[in-house]
Image (cartoon, rainbow, N blue to C red; front, side):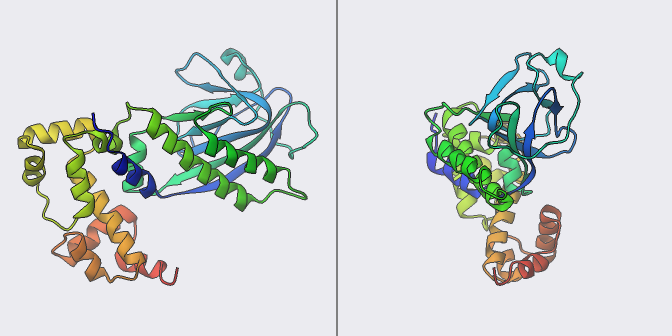
Length: 303
C-alpha cells in the first residue's frame, strides 16, 4: 500500500482548529470530572501528580502521570478520577479545582481545554481518526511533543499566574505534533487519510486538490481510478466514510476560503472552484461555512 506521505502531510497541514482553555488547577482527595455531554473535543495535560482515565467500553483504566496527555477527538463518555477502579469512580464527588500549587506533593495538576475543528475539510479528516489519543511522556517517538509539554510545565510555574493564551497556543501546537505521530504510526486510519494512502485513490485525491475547478462528475472520477461508476462509489465510501461529492465539496470550499482570505472577489473564488453560477456557489458556501462568501471575505480583510 502506498502511504502517499505528501498527501497525508497536506491533510494534516490543512486542518484548521481553535483551542480554548477551560480548566487550569489541581484536584486532591477523592474526585472525578468529565466534559462528556458538551459535544466538544477536549484535551487534558497532567502537569503534577497523577490520575486515572476511565473510558466507557474499555475495562482497563489508563494511568496518567506527569507529562502524559489525553486528547479526546470526540464527545465520548469518559471520566478522569483519583480512583483506579471504575466501580469506585461514580461514588466520588465532582469537585471544583483549586489553584495550582508548585509545592504540592499530593493530588493532580491539570491543564484542560477544548478543540473546535472547523467545519468542512477539517471535520472530514477528524472523522477518520480514533476517538482518543494518549501521549506518554516516555514515548521515544514524541520528542517534539514532549519538548512542548516541558514549555507548558514551565508556563504553569509562571508567577503570579500562567498565561491562558500561551497555554492554548502551546497545547494546539503540541496536538499537531501528536496528530503527525498518530498518522505516521497508525496504518489503520480511515477517512481521507485512507484515501491518501491508497494507490488507486491517492492520484484522484491529488487531482481534486490541485484542480477543484474541473467538472468532476462521478463518471470522470470513476474513470480516473479505472473502476466502474458503481464500484467506484461503493469503494470510495468504504474508504473515506464520505461520498465523492462530499469530499469534493469540502476541498472546493477550503480552496474558496483561501482565495477569499487573500482578497479575491466572490466571483473569482466561484470560478476558481468550478461553479458556473454565483448563486449556486453562495448556497454551497453558506451551507458549509454558515455565512455568505462576501461576509467571510469582509471578515478576513486586512488580516
